[in-house]
Image 1 (tube, helix red, strand yellow):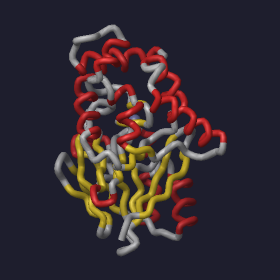
Image 2 (tube, helix red, strand yellow):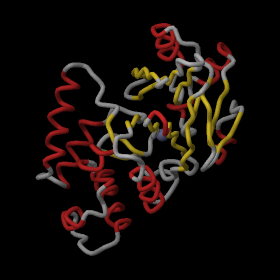
Image 3 (cartoon, helix red, strand yellow):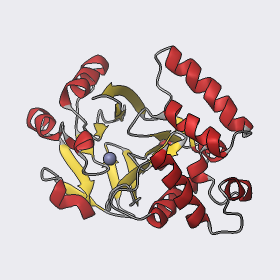
Amino acid sequence: MPAETKLFRCLNDNYGVLIHDPASGATAAIDAPEAPPIEAALKATGWTLTDILVTHHHGDHTGGIADLKKKYRCRVVAPRAEAGKIPLADETVREGDKVKVGTLAANVIETPGHTAGHITFWFQGDKIVFAGDTLFSIGCGRVIEGTPEMMWASLLKLRDLPGDTRVYCGHEYTLANIKFAQTIEPNNAALAARAAQAERQRAAGEPTIPTTLDEEKAANPFLRADVPAVAAAVGLAGKTPAEVFTEIRARKNKF
Ligand SMILES: [Zn+2]
C-alpha cells in the first residue's frame, strides 16, 4: 500500500511532516521541530507516532523529540555522525542503511554540508525524499559545518534520484529562493513558471512543497552549477561545477 503523508507548519518557517504506512499503522515524523503541531497532526489524521527520523542535530529539527518520545515511546533514528548531539537517539544510521517504518523502507543517504553529519531519507518505493536542510525548493541549505564542495557533492547525490521523486524539505523558503534564483537565471522559463505557481500557492495559504526533482533540476540554480549558461552567468565560464556552486552559494548568503 502506498505511503500517506501529512505536511504542516512548525515554529516560524519550519515544516513538520508525517509519513504513514496504512498496511501496518506505523507513522514516522521526519524531524521534530516542536511537539504541539506534530501532536495536532497526529490527532487530525488519527495516526499514532511510532518513529522519529532525524535529518540533523539543529534545534529547529530536534526540539520536540523529548516530549514526543516521552508521550509515544517512539523510536528515534538519527545520523550516526551526529549521535552525540542527538542524545535521545535509539538507533543511529549511516550511508546505505535502510530504515523501516512498518512495511515502508527508507534508504539513508549521507548529505553533509549544512551540518557535518546531515542525512536524507529516501523512500524509494514511494518516490519520496526527505531532504531536511540540504535541498530546498529552488534553494539549498546554508553550508554551516561542511564545505561548499561537500554540499555540491551531496546535492548531486539527490539530483541523481529518479526525476519524479517528490521532495520534502525543512523550511518554507521558496518565494525568497525564487527571487534569488532569478538574479542568476532571469530568462529560465521553468523558473518563471515555478514563480507563478509558488505565488499562487502562497497567496492561497498553501505550502509550495512537495516539489519534484525534475522541477528542481529545471529551475534550482544550486542543482545547475554544471550548466554552462549558469557558470557564464556568474562569470565563471569553464570553471568546475564546485567552483560555480561555491560562488552561487556565496551570492545567496549576501542576497
Ligand atoms: Zn538546519
